[in-house]
Image (cartoon, rainbow, N blue to C red; front, side, top):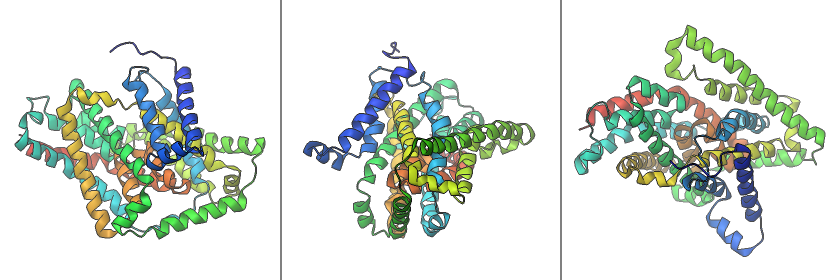
Length: 414
């Protein structure tokens, strides 16, 4: 690989903020061209896609940058707290069972999609899914299943369980990132057309709209021009809770790993898992206190700033040119994802689930805790906790689902 043009994270972060600033400036412009452009392409999608060009054209090396680590470990927990302190749990409960149904549908779509993709290609192009031991394609695909149902911890677990070697694993990571992030991009693009999609699905989105209107009314009632003290309080709450989440995670994860190593299959030995769970829990607890009033000073807006930075750092890791390195594997991965999408669409049509549940249910699996709240918050900041709760469920189920998927793929592999 050629030496990247930029290696200093401070410089790269400056470019990321430039991209975000330009996107937000143009998306709020009254210019006719930009109005038409953003009527078709959502601003959130541009915040995700434009940073991917930096890695694709060798300007940066995303793997060497620490920006995603900082955003996911520091800004993500803080934004989860800031987006959750104003949440109304009763309203979330009113959303009903469709969120869970679509989440489990997404999981089943991945568990069955892997073996179905292998079965299909074993007939039409067997060379794409067959390889001598220990490089069997199905074996490597178990790590994608771990990532797409749960997250990084589940992916690592599958790598060990099915003894996936380094060369095969690196190829599968590329398929995971490209196909998964492409689907994330499609979901983000669909948010701008959610009302049209809901009409096509004949979905009842009244509960979601009710929650959005209630949150907007709460924000307007408590809205005020934030003072420097207000902003300091917001940042204090966000980062104190982030610090507490890290402190407890640093203690809980190793303790479980030492005393209850079998719980590794539930991702309970993952530090990141506990950071997300603890930060969200603290936010929910604070939503019952006067801290909730900080929403009027813009707590969710600052949380949204952190989310957009996270989106940009996720986008950095998508190298669209990697598809051409081993196109056969990407075709298998894409087919796998299409099974997932087809099942989601079918079930959404049958139960008349709104697009919000389709997008968040899928992202809670494929994207995990880093992406699910992003997609949920794109509908409304108050809905971010729904994405978090489902993503945490994905972590718990990830290893089981991926293991079952692995056994099925092994059974049907040529």
